[in-house]
Image 1 (cartoon, rainbow, N blue to C red):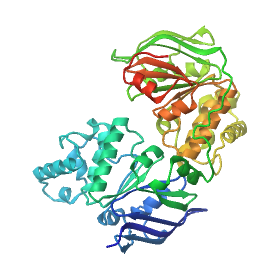
Image 2 (cartoon, rainbow, N blue to C red; image 1 turned 90 degrees about the vertical axis):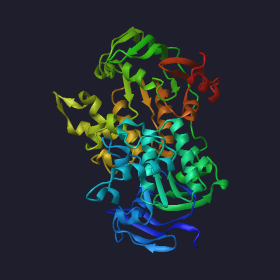
Image 3 (tube, helix red, strand yellow; image 1 turned 30 degrees about the vertical axis):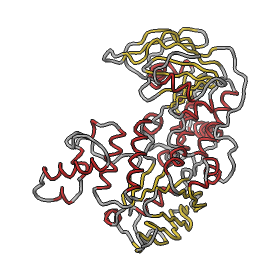
Image 4 (cartoon, one colour; image 1 turned 120 degrees about the horizontal axis):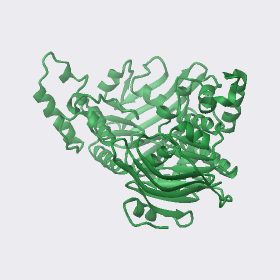
Length: 507
């Protein structure tokens, strides 16, 4: 029997004016976890859309062979019937339906004139047991955590007799404990002979899980190697086509003793009276990178969203900007005081995806491109062009819709928008989530440039290496309190985790 579960040979896919895939070859052995890596725009998603039938046979050149048989998928269902299942980063579940209903939605069991619910629930229980999930099949999906919803998606794919399971950035929104559960499940599936294609920017996960790694760059296959022959640095080098001597290009810089922002005994309550933040006190200095670490639910985002005026509810304590006490009740107040906040969910809160780059860039500071209360179109385009050029934005033109850009370029538009407000303090919440390693590197360089100009930068991140690699000083939060503070030279993963899990205050 053929040792390959999948072979894709000479795949060429073109869009108007763009060759997205150029003679790509991709081979996956049966029963292995095979990582597919590359920067955004490298062609990973396009290749998987061809495999899953989104782009039907005839719209591309090349051939697909599954278990030694040549296949030509004209529909998504034909791909599913051949044993291919794909789980996208945005989960395709109906939150108001039960787990059982989601598992068999569109399945033969749900298409019969009379549905045997006893059989549905029994089959659902088997599927859940198969992935080690002990929950009631009649639970509404909307009542589950994102981590459990991700496992439901895998169970759903396996109900369709999936032999080749594709996971696209499966851990982007998961907690560390959920990631461990998912990785354990994938190891079990591999042991049962399921072939997995794993797409992720998180190279630590790739190194821990994968048997082999294929790297795409600019629509071409660069290499396929066994994991034993690779390191994170080698993968990065192949992905970007150059050596990145440091994944986190921190540059030593002078830090002023001057506090731009000082927060004293700051507490936050939600609109139902629940205390979210407990007596937080800290400062942000001019030209400093302040890292904020902590586990999910520690209150990191809530603290800074509140300081930016974005949370309803009671607040107590004192906030000083440039030594002057201030009261921020809404984001407009924060912008006037020199604060800028880049949300962790850029698509939902940072951008208007249907608008072009120019409009998104000027959105937070329209007064700067207005004359006599009317937007000056020429000035708006000129200003947006200057800012996005500084960000090294890659886009066809400024009229391009932001929703068409890669994650890294979308983040650069968000940064451009907030830099237009001339912030004194720039708060970056998960600034590199869901973007590739090359774009991460460019954003870190932008951060270095901004602090050299005297901007105070706050980086809130779930990625400990990012916090340690880029910060001058680190604050650790746990259960709404600041439980640790470390200078760059003092901070270690062990010390931070001790404080993050409720250890005593350090620093």
